Image 1 (cartoon, rainbow, N blue to C red):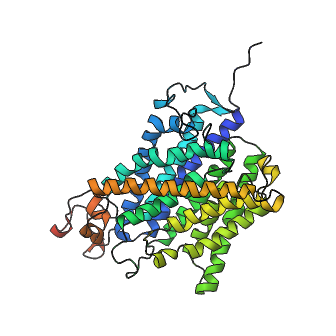
Image 2: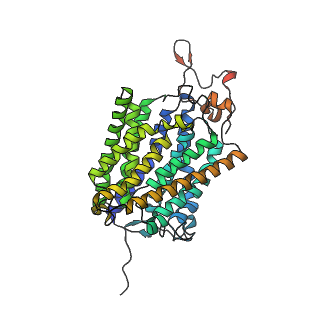
Image 3: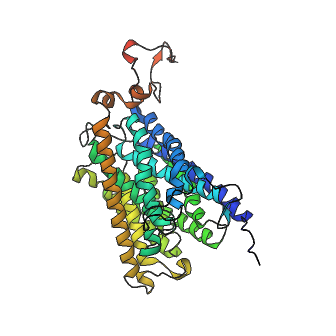
Amino acid sequence: MPLAAAHADTGDTAWLLAATALVLLMTPGLALFYGGMVRTKSVLNMLMMSFVSIALVTVVWLAAGYSLTFGEDAVGGLIGGLDHVGMRGLGPDSVQGTVPTLLFATFQLTFAIITAALVSGAVADRAKFGAWLVFVPVWALLVYVPVAHWVWGPGGWILEKLGALDFAGGLPVEIVSGASGLALCLVLGPRLGFKKDAMRPHNLPMVMLGAGLLWFGWFGFNAGSALGANGLAAAAFLNTLAAGCTGLLGWLFVEQKRDGHPTTLGAASGAVAGLVAITPSCGSVSLLGALVVGLAAGTVCSYAVSWKFKLNYDDSLDVVGVHLVGGVIGTLLIGVFAVDSMTGGAEGLLYGGGLAQLGKQLLAVVVVAVYAFAVTYGIGRLIDATMGFRASEEQEQTGLDLTVHAETAYDHGVLGHGAPVSSSVVSPAQKVTPQA
C-alpha cells in the first residue's frame, strides 16, 4: 500500500508564519537598539548596517545558503549539499515536518539575517559601509552557514555525532555573532577617543523601544523553533519571558550595588542578556532552570561589558559582553539544568545526568567560538588589505551619517525665530561627497 503524501498542518503553519514575521521584526528592533546606543553622528549608518543585512543575507540564503545549511550532508557533518541551490526543487507542496518547506526556509533565513546584523554593533562608528556590503555575504556563507549546518542540518556533527543541545541558536547565532564581533574589533582597532572620550548612548528611549521589539520578536525566535503550535512551543515561550525578566533584574541589582543607580540602559541590556542565554536552553530546561539561566546571564554580562576596557578591545555596543558571554552561559547551563521532560532523554548535572552533557556543551562552545573568530578574522583582514575596512579619521570624526550617506538623523540648525533649516539650505562646509 503506498504511503500517504505528507501534508502541512494548518495550525503549525499559521504559528510558524507568525513566528517568522516576529523574528524578521527583530532586525529593525536591533537597528533601533543599536541606533540609540551610538552618538548622533552615526545613527543612520548604524540603522543602515542592520537594514542592508536583510537584503544581503536574503539573496545569499536563497542562492546557496539554505541548501548548504539544510541540504543533505555532503562532507562528514560539516556542510550540506547543493541540491537546493536557488531553492531548486522546493515548491509550494514541499513539506518539512508539518510545515511547508518554503516557510521553514524563510523562518531559518530570519535567523541568519539577525546574526549578521548583530556583528555590526561591535564595529559601530568606524566601519566602511562599502566594506560591510562585501563582508556580510562572504561571512554568511563561510561562517554562519557551516555552523548552522553543524547544529541543525541533517547529519550535522554537533547535532547527530556530538549530541550537544541547542534549541534556538545559542551556538550559530549568539556565540557566532559574539566571536565574530570580537574578531572584527581586533581587525579595525578601537574608535578614536576610546577610553578617553565619553561615548554615551544618544537616545535611551530609542534603546528601550528597540529592546522591547527584540523581546517581542524573541517569542517567535524561541517558541517558533518548536516548529509547531504545541506544548514545547508554550514551554519555550514561558521560559523566554521568565529569563528576560530575571536577566533584567540581575543587571539592575548589580548596577544598584556597584554604581548606586539602576539605569534604563541596564534594564534593556539585562533583558537582552537573559534572552540571549535562554535562546539555546529554552527547549531543554524547566521554568526554574530558565529563571536561573536569565539571572546568571544578567549578572555576569553586567560585569563582562567592562572587560573591553581592561583588555583593550573596543566592542562598541557590547556584542562580546552580551551575546558571546550570554550565549556561552546559556549553552553551558543546558548541561546543568536540562530535564528529560523537555529534551526527551538528555539530563543535566542537577537532574542525574552527570557531567556527560556538560562536556558535550563545552566542546561545542569552544569549537564554534574558535571557528567563528578565526574565519571572521581572516575575512576581515583580507577585506582590510584589499579595500580597507575602517573609515578614514576624517569620516569618523565628522560622523558616518554625513560623510557616507549625506544625511543626518537630527536637524539641529535653525533660521530666524526657530524655523528649521531647509534641506536645500546647506553651507559649503556642510557639503560632503558621500564615500563608502
